[in-house]
Length: 115
Image (tube, rainbow, N blue to C red; front, side, top):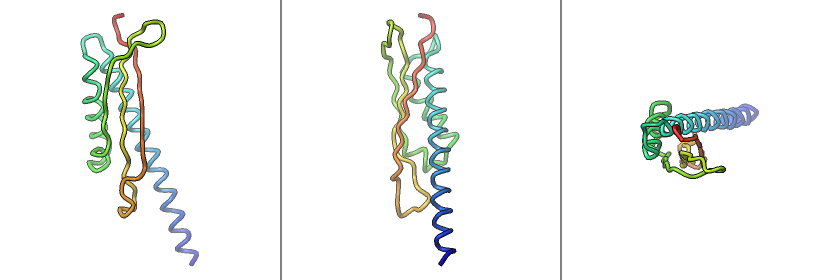
C-alpha cells in the first residue's frame, strides 16, 4: 500500500521536474530566437522559425510538435523597435492517458540592432 503511494509521489515529482525543464528549454529557445531576429540583417519574421528549430533540436519530437511559435516586430517604450517571439502550446505528460494537458506560454523580446 505504501509502495503505491510512493510510486504516485515519485511520478508527480518526475512530471513537475520534466515540465520545468521543458519550459526552460522553450523559454531559452524563444530568447535566442528573439536575439537572432533582432540582428541588423535578419528580419523579425525569421524568429519563429528559428525558435521552432531550436525547440525541435532540444526536445523530443512529440514534445516539439505541440509547440507553435510566432514572431513580430513591436514598438516599445521610448520608440525602441522590439522583436517579440511568442511560443505557446502544451507539454505532453508522462502518463500517456492524460495526454497533453500541461499548457506553456512563453514570450521573449529583444531590441532591434542598428536603431
